[in-house]
Length: 174
Image 1 (cartoon, rainbow, N blue to C red):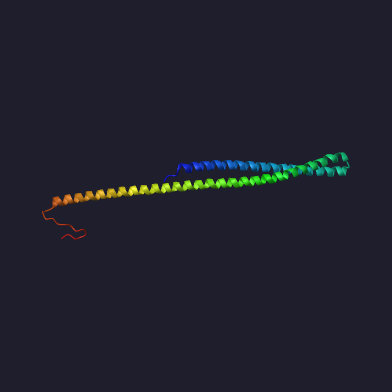
Image 2: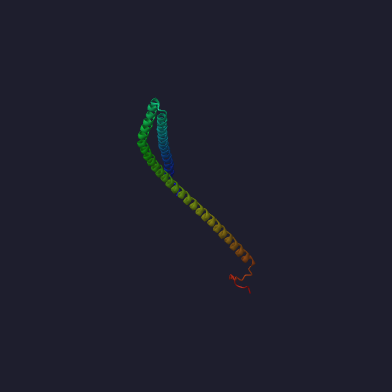
């Protein structure tokens, strides 16, 4: 039985679904990486502000201290805002990864069904081919055997001396 067109269409649909889920996963992972990079920049801004606060404390310049403290506050605020967004983006990325893996498994199942069907078709075709070959050989053998029997019977009939003797296969002539 040939692989059905419906099964082939199902495989194409599964391919498309897997591709869509892969793109959604890449998007979620890109968003997560962007948020993590923003968190890193916020941490660097906070560290830079703390360094400036320490430098202004040593130089005893209060005018430099205020912008440095603002940098620390901004960096801390950004980190506090980004942390829950990163957690949500991580959860979303995990959800999309699970959906992608599920679709990949479904596609592979459809591929397996098609491959097994094609293998069965190939086995059946080989079996039928061998059967036709066997039938051809048997027919040829039987035809040649009948022709030999006819030739033997016609040659025995013309060489006969009038006494009909039946030959016994495997018997010694007298």
